[in-house]
Image (spheres, rainbow, N blue to C red):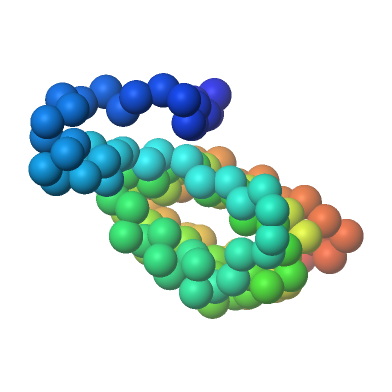
Length: 116
């Protein structure tokens, strides 16, 4: 991780092309961490639109088994961190569908041995 957005830095692309096509054409999002607010399963579904997403940190009780199933479908996802979510052991088992996932971190009082 370590790559953070510096809002004062100009994107690394030709200014003329950004003016014509917009900054988003040159964006490549590889990590998403929700710091404020509580993401929902719908938010996770939208993250599937980020083709280069590799690292995802979700925190909050609005993430359910459905959100984990949606995260498992993110093609390049390699690391997933779930903190204080409503995910059940059945939801965790859905991650077996994620071929590239190599790191799973679980935090929170609701995590039990049956999640593993």
